[in-house]
Image (cartoon, rainbow, N blue to C red; front, side, top):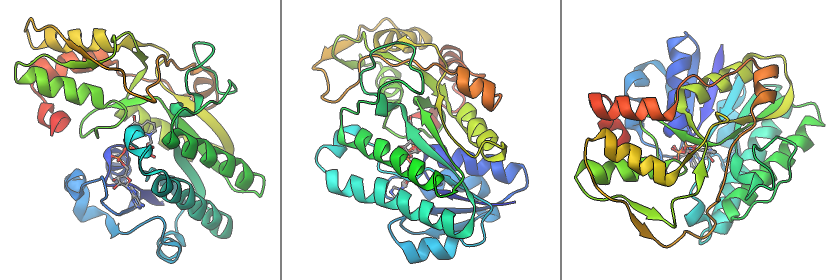
Length: 309
Ligand SMILES: NC(=O)c1ccc[n+]([C@@H]2O[C@H](COP(=O)([O-])OP(=O)(O)OC[C@H]3O[C@@H](n4cnc5c(N)ncnc54)[C@H](O)[C@@H]3O)[C@@H](O)[C@H]2O)c1
């Protein structure tokens, strides 16, 4: 089949692209390389079509998407901290760009599986978080992701097939500095025998989900007969940021002590996904646990450069 991946030169998008190529699909990537890198597509660059373009450019998108069977929409500006100073740009890319894709899905009748975010929940009232729980975005980035969900609902009511995957904190090879960027920062520091710096007391919990599992969720969502839904994509387990720092130190066989800095504005305290809905409807289950993956990556040195570069 023919698939388009927006943001396909980024962290998650490039993993989706690899998996689709490896399973013999025709892949087009559209990315303006504002955060992604062509190098992320090194392994498959000769087997895909790469369009260096912007999802705000409706005519370009129309041309790129007119014959596709489905779009994995990953392109977005995704830094919580940056979104405070670039609110309008975040809105134009994340909301305007998403609406362009949904408009074209209506016109050309392709299915859209897109990257939503656990950040739409803000600081949750109950743990684990269920899909119907209250949405309370606490930063401009998260507001754009919630606006995207409202757009998805609007277009689904007009017959568009669209599934939003609310990723929790995605980690893995080639990861960007957003979300699970804490892993990257800690590994970089500890690798050079320096103490990792924790924002706040380190008691904030995170539900880290492996990128390979996120890719599978995307593909299951695209192939399923579910037309419209939102799913939490996490692991239903958590680790505190302090535990994470200590795990990395231990895996490097060092005895550093983390340093504590000030809390970050807009930083969510607790997250943990309830994933019963996606387990039931898409038969998806995460397979890789952060503890084992990190230990293994650090101890064997495999892909360690891909994590820190
Ligand atoms: N990484 C996570 O933990 C996480 C968690 C929740 C949601 N998400 C969402 O998942 C998606 C992918 O995130 P990622 O971690 O791979 O980030 P990323 O920055 O690595 O990937 C995003 C890609 O989109 C591209 N892009 C940005 N603006 C664009 C534009 N105007 N036109 C075309 N391309 C553009 C960037 O160049 C980049 O390659 C994003 O929508 C993000 O909001 C990620």
